[in-house]
Amino acid sequence: MKCVDDFRLKFGKKEYVPIITGGMGVDISTADLALVAARLGGIGHISDAMTPAVADQRFRTGFVKQKLKKYKFNVASSDKSAIQFNLEHLAEASRLHVARTMEAKKGDGLIFINVMEKLTMNNPRETLRVRVASVMDGGIDGITLGAGLHLSTLGLVQDHPRFRDVKFGLIVSSLRALTLFLRKNARLNRPLDYIVVEGPLAGGHLGFDMNWAEFDLKTIVDEILQYLKQEGLDIPVVPAGGIFTGTDAVEFLETGSAAVQVATRFTVTKECGLPDKVKQEYFKANEEDIEVNLVSTTGYPMRMLKNSPAIGAGIRPNCEAYGYLLDAAGKCSYIDAYNRELEKHPDGKNISVKDKTCMCTQMRNFDCWTCGHNAYRLKDTSRRLPDGTYQLLTAEHVFKDYQYSKDHQIMLPAEEAA
Ligand SMILES: Cc1cc2nc3c(=O)[nH]c(=O)nc-3n(C[C@H](O)[C@H](O)[C@H](O)COP(=O)(O)O)c2cc1C
View 1: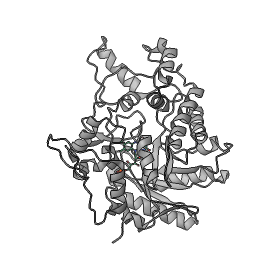
View 2: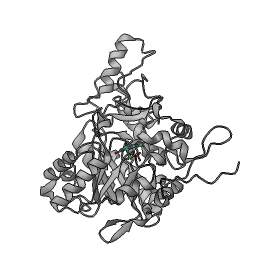
View 3: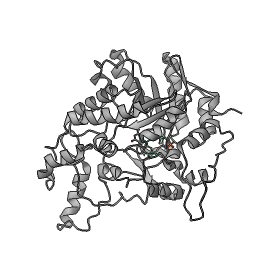
View 4: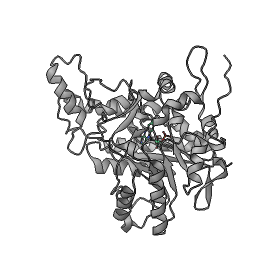
């Protein structure tokens, strides 16, 4: 019987342990988490979501404060179109986040960054160009394009000196999305280095409608593998979403996939950016406590714990400080939903917005508890302590469990001294 360690992901002549920890915004997939995956010979993702806010926390910079100060006059207005990101600050934040992570890298693995097209930031094209270019400046090993079709993203940075040296991957949830991308980018003569195929059981946003349950990761992966073969394209395929044990991974690796991308099992590790109290919520969750809903202002369905404080919260939109989901016209569906409720409660008190949530603030505050479908099995991956809480894991423990486990077994952590 095989384990994940019997396989290797190959990029050119280099080989890696075929385990990729997925990007989890906002700073849930911390640099510390990604660095463990890289140290152990795999690939770890950091995320480019809200890098100015993340840099402020990591490096005591003042990007958010400066932006808020500049746009404070606009706080009470529902028209957010005037709010623009300072592109130099944005570049500096992204570069810092990446460069400091790369400086700390040890071992033979790689550090990638997850870049979301849906972070439209009231200036979609320029903010995306700056983000992608500055993470390349910062020395990132690879860029995984997600949360959007990214039809024009590569073209934005085609003149960057690292355009052909950095690895570029794309997250898709269907063969159709992949062929659209390939067709649109054929003229760049810059093939993708890997393709992440994200199925309906993943955490974060889903590339499916609310009928996600009708789809199945294995079917989509097989379709994409067959297409690539037929076209003579040799691009590593990386399934993601619901791969909970090493054996789940082996089933994909044995049938043509090059690596797997996993995330949910790492949400309960010490290195994960969620507050410890929230990690306990993930441990405790039962299957019926998890839902896919439409509260995200990206327009994509998102999976989360039903008791996420973000659901039904009624905070004032915070676009002067954040504003990452403002579209090209300076609009966000949360602003409209909030204003509708404000009309019913003109004193601004007791506002609850049920249909949308202020994604920037809620994600930044770790109050939107997104997770994969299998989060309800996390309790089986650790020990219950006498006080009723669960023992946190280390990222190394979870990584090695994926790497060496057989027969769907999950290795429990060594008991921690009281
Ligand atoms: C807490 C959490 C946050 C996530 N955030 C993002 C994100 O910001 N961008 C993204 O492309 N995928 C995101 N994902 C998806 C993961 O990167 C990954 O592809 C997927 O969750 C793998 O499935 P698994 O969680 O069942 O292992 C997130 C997943 C989780 C669990």
